[in-house]
Image 1 (cartoon, rainbow, N blue to C red):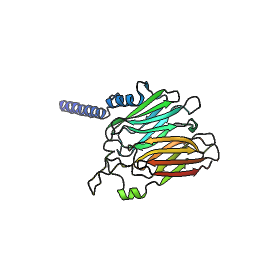
Image 2 (spheres, one colour):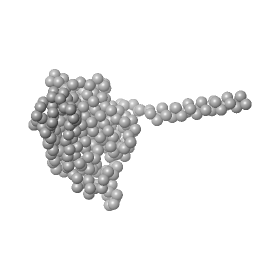
Image 3 (cartoon, rainbow, N blue to C red):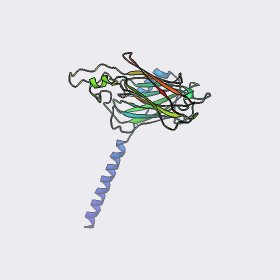
Image 4 (cartoon, rainbow, N blue to C red):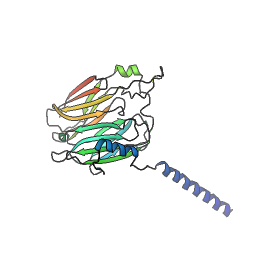
Length: 272
């Protein structure tokens, strides 16, 4: 009887060990120095050094995304935007997407913070990277590995006619409790299907032609605060959160340009 119990105990221990090993294997992250990243780095930055560090910038993303077509990405700066030292540009890069440059964000040092939040599509399991270019030209990079696939070719959330009927409707808003001189969050949203050109119309069985938001510019009291040059990797109905520093009697204005050269605009009188 004791021998049988010992054997059962060993079998259970082995099963637990195997299950734990499989769980660890499921969380393994490949080497971040991918061939795609090496080619992308050379194409964008040439032989300039890109420092892998979280001291300047960090990026947050789910390890396993619930929806590959709507993956939340949060880029956080570790330094304040000051005249002497600030983040001039942020490159949002997705190694294995059909077009890996998802967005390039040009930022004003007057924003106060260089944080950016948005949602992206991922076509394969991939590294998602944020590269910060400082005003002195230094480059710093942070990355996350995300398990998600099929996001670029996934059908739009609404039927094509409904999506196009709402085309260009915009929202521009800020968080409550603003304080003059203290960086505050703001958000710009635009209703747009952001067709990738990889999505199939389920009725005609033909691919829907690409049409997406390619640029968003935000002005703070008529001074340019943010320029976002975007690709179809940004999810349907693009949504970008950013920072600005209220000065009193502020006005925010957002201008949107899509790949068919249609323009949309929204203004907001900021209540301090």
